[in-house]
Length: 217
Image (cartoon, rainbow, N blue to C red; front, side):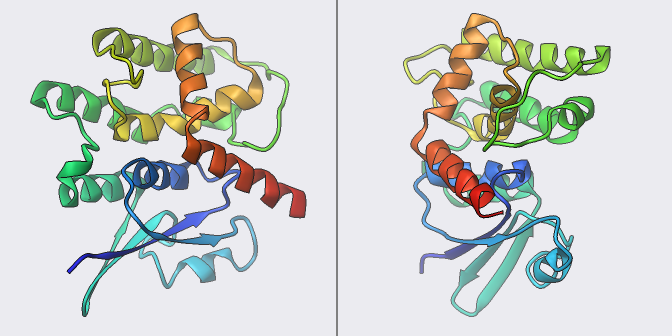
């Protein structure tokens, strides 16, 4: 029996954490129902609570007959999907490459707080480059270094971080949108990577929905 997936996500213009598993599932061609819960509203917490033990999105509900399981946190969701669908190749097949991909994914998952604060996710709009302190500049430099190292080492026609699209690309996709929103100047290799990510059909779909959401506000 195939599982039924329901992914609970936040507002597409601002929810970077939601974009990660959503993009991974889209790129892996895994069918799922999407439930969007608007963030930063008085009723937000009450709407999320029945679907996520942490009270946060994203959360994935997995239904298999009478068995229902909820997985929350973007990395846990992606790891679960990679285990359940090995044929989707959400992680690189080679063990050492997979270890590196997991490392840079975990680094993004737990790090870069200054970058997140200074360059908040706002897909639908464009803003001038704000004043960036040393901490933010250092974290931008680190992101670029991660990209350039992976792109050079695992170079192929697909042009993703570890050759084919992986969870690592899904986790850095929100940063790509932040760099685009604020017009952050990037070296040629990194800039070309951002262009490949934003050109993905699911990314265009997400951006269109984000702009539609903002237009209604």
